[in-house]
Length: 375
Ligand code: IPM
Ligand code: MN
Picture 1 (tube, rainbow, N blue to C red):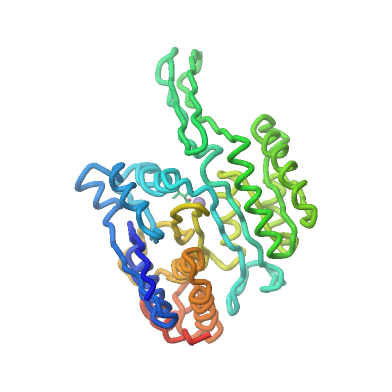
Picture 2: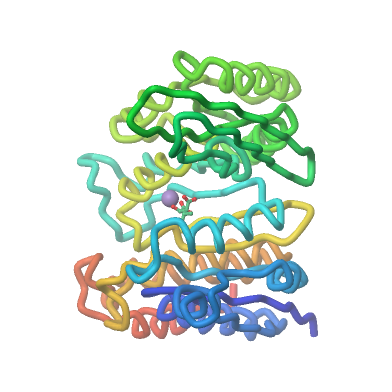
């Protein structure tokens, strides 16, 4: 029997509660489809950081990358300054494993009502491909505390290295800067992925940027995208500024099939996408390296006020788990999990409070297991 080794990082806040349901449902899918998953649980997150002073070591990263996939809950805790866990954990894994694609399906599942009046499941069904290693996420920046400062900043990726030597002199009270960068290689691999995906869908790609203001970065983004698009004559292409895209997500979501966006705009737009598909409780994401190890997670964060209350909706995490099964080579098991989620929602009896129900996190997990049937 085929066995997969998967690293589970439940993390902070509601992370452990939702990951527990994800593991429960994926184990049921594995039994049904005759494979096994060997879970290795890792304690990374706020508690681990507070106890050891370390978020993740190089050695931890190397160990995580030896699994077939990584299943991640959430990170963020009020005892730890913003950025430490996010950058030290999620971003560190994305960059270390070179997970250059972030896939976020924006699909209104049956039985869920969109906050958009008059929009149904037919209208809300697209995928956002977010470039996941560049842009303003390269962590190159500085707080300039003196009037004169020299910074040496380095960005290392599997594909390239970039060094900045920056001399800053200023007359402001204090200042800070943050560098965004994109490369031809980085843009090409993300945009190509989006076009290939579109060929399996409705063959339309919307490219997001802010080329009217951030002209340097996003003129390169458009140039490379145009080259990629030329290789896919069967796919139609549209360029859209991010602010306009935010409006169209709400007004006419049906116009989108595959949306491809630079890292930060993709981050913001996918929270909006989550809202139109009924909320963060049912929105999933995958950080994918098509040639390497990928990580799967709900889009929502750790939601500290809900921690330990069994109120969090586990569907986002279970959906992310289905994406994981598909990626590791079990598409039928993935389909079973998706159908079980849909059955749970259609029956509508066992729901958490974000969907108007009174069920606990683990009751929803149990019901989804019950809804699972052979294909
Ligand atoms: C997301 C999150 C992360 C991001 C944080 C937790 C680093 O908001 O996955 O969208 O900004 O990418
Ligand atoms: Mn986000």
